[in-house]
Length: 207
Image (cartoon, rainbow, N blue to C red; front, side, top):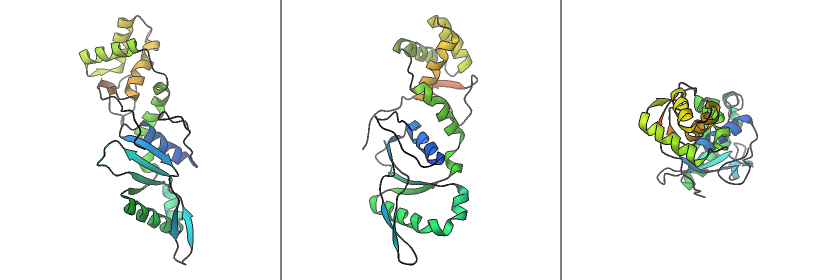
């Protein structure tokens, strides 16, 4: 999966891991994340030791928030492979505690949410920015009329810019994708979505 944060591809071994990475890519709280960040020893009940590699390490802009070491697993695997997975989870928790991290197990319940649907919808718009002039005009209109429905904003932006509605709608979704326009991303996005002025996503790398 390509990342917009730097010139690299993020690897994944399942669609669940891919979806988790999309959420990290989209989150304004995440400064940096890495797949398969470390391999640690996993001790089994019989005394044997095997390598264990968690799926992701996530770091945040908030310096008070500890990094998260994450294992992505389907709910069915947690039940079906409980005995096999227990030593790995124990090793992950121990490593996280020793390094000041939080260890989490993320399933499809936490990952495949309405927020993920919004992130997938907005991804293409984030990679196709509008002209600075059109974006500034859009933000000025929202400042004047907020909160405002996307459908009404399209009408006003089209009239003010002289562009067809189909040309200005991507600008609005781009600004939502970068958090310059704020809305409830836990609700389905549509022309009825209400937007207001937001806080732009920060750029930077905490690595």
